[in-house]
Amino acid sequence: MTKLKVGIYGITGCAGCQLSVIFNEDELLDLIEVVDLKAFPFIKEVNPDEQYDLIFLEGLVADKGDLEAAKKLRKNAKILVALGACAVTGCVPAYRNFTLKQNYEHLLYRKIRELQDVQPTPVDMHVRVDYYLPGCPPDKRQILAFIKGAVKGAIPRPTDNPVCVECRQNGNACLLEIGKPCLGPITAGGCNAVCVNGGLECWGCRGPTKDMNLPLMISLLKRKGFDEKFIQDRMRTFAGLKLPMLKEVLHGKNHHA
Ligand code: SF4
Ligand code: SF4
Ligand code: SF4
Image 1 (cartoon, rainbow, N blue to C red):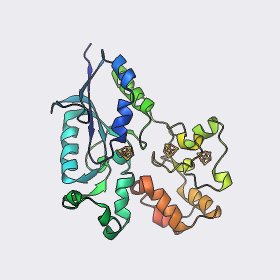
Image 2 (cartoon, protein in one colour):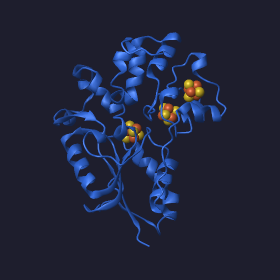
Image 3 (spheres, rainbow, N blue to C red):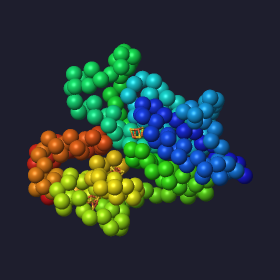
Image 4 (cartoon, rainbow, N blue to C red):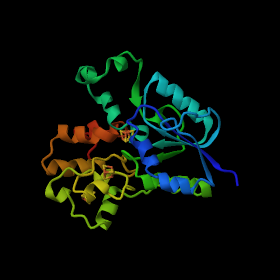
């Protein structure tokens, strides 16, 4: 049987998503007969520049080097998977789109300051992406299930349900009801509501659901006492670039709630 040739790569990100892959170490070793983990620059010295069946790409495009890497990996991949929130939505590093340079410039290392920027953006704004594994980081089981599915030619479909569905299935008490700003109702599920299980509200790291009701979510948060600035900052933290209509809805110009 021909092995599935897999590459795991990263551009601008924190490597947390690549660590999620590594945390499957035991299970990946069990797949050694069917998967050839041929490239993984984070942990391997030799990473051939050639064709792959499957490439996972962590991180967003934030400089020229990222852009070149994304284009090259796209060419090398039969299937390109955006791995994690940075790649899928732009995540926290893309927040720079919503603030003034003077608010973050002092935080940059000198070397980074001298880099030629690209506006920080998700991978699919630059190259075609075949599949998305969202989350900051994605659940390691989700990555493993994807690899196993690719081996069998049956890649799992992402859930259309919001985080609330898994949250309620887990028997959690609703945090919104006690006044916490949980974004579960508008956030794509698949993480098993891990944050709420641990008592924390969902910040929306898996990005918005396809059929979210943003006006209703905003009006609910306002009724709970959160002001527009708080709601905007919270919703922009992980997925601001995927909510281009946020400002309009916040200020009541498109209010269907
Ligand atoms: S999605 Fe989260 S864990 Fe993954 S690279 Fe970005 S910041 Fe790190
Ligand atoms: S706690 Fe959050 S995710 Fe859970 S049901 Fe309430 S709003 Fe939904
Ligand atoms: S509960 Fe929300 S913030 Fe937490 S992992 Fe799931 S989608 Fe991300």
